[in-house]
Image (tube, one colour):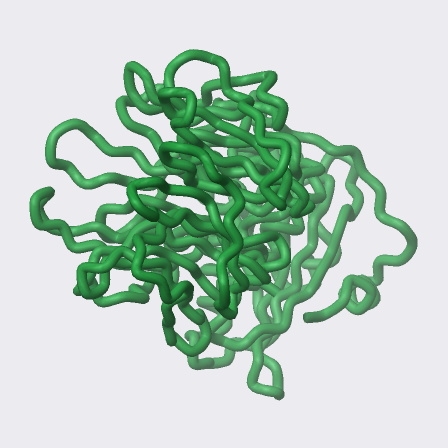
Length: 433
């Protein structure tokens, strides 16, 4: 990756860059993202650099539009940009098409067999540069450069954390409802680079990315025995997490990726346990009659939220990471399930059951409950790395396949995510390195 200083020197920009945080879902910012020029059109394994400049701009534009904060200028009103204009924008021309901000850049094939993408953000009204960065990637990873450019723009103009350069793992569903095939699949946040990780020969549920992005934990019915497994993303190898003659399910990682918390059903009672990712003897954290499950760590690793029916119905509880000080936090009526602690630590997302399934959030003490969706069956929330957006899956009435959706913490911005097949149980990865 090129550092900001290197790109700034190339652009002739010096000194600190300042600007106000702008934008918002209720008043999206008009932003122009013209095609990126190339110093010299060169054929690469990913295509000609002139074509890549157009594709990179469209990925950036789509990312920003889908965030809900931005309203990209329609492409028929965009101007062609040559290389000198990348660092010297024609501000009056961009002002005429209504752009408040401008994203320009370039795509260049390097002598080292890699691709360089320059990314520049400008304030059209103030006629001033705001931010700049450069990314050097393998040709096959050109989309990652586009996502990172969009992340830079998004973070600079909204004050929120980045999240476009991450992935989603989910359960891919196909076939009739009474004979459904379920496979683990992974894709970029915009649906690109989709691939299946398991072959569908056994049912899989609840895949979860490790915070370090290296492994995925999930439940599988391999050999008709429901057990938790660990999947190595790089090698594709998978292994049993706990070698015990009991059903294990609902796994999730600790923030440092060293441990997995999961539920284990022993003699008709399900409790929450912790075990090292490498395996070993599980440590029991809960010990009450009924079902304790869906554990999720706070980002500092000190507490765990989980669901339990110990009070007669599914409710949310919080405990210390060692299992002490267990206390109920959900009192809004109905039942509560599948909690997940926000990466920011300020909210817990959940599924609320009663008159349908809804996605909601509350503070870790149970206060400030808000319901974000209003469909027939929305469930399984998973936070984006920036703690502002939540993925979940929606199951329609009848035999139709479930689909993936996202909603922001205000509940105003909701959209469907593209998947080639039915989709459930999403889990967001951390930002990629």
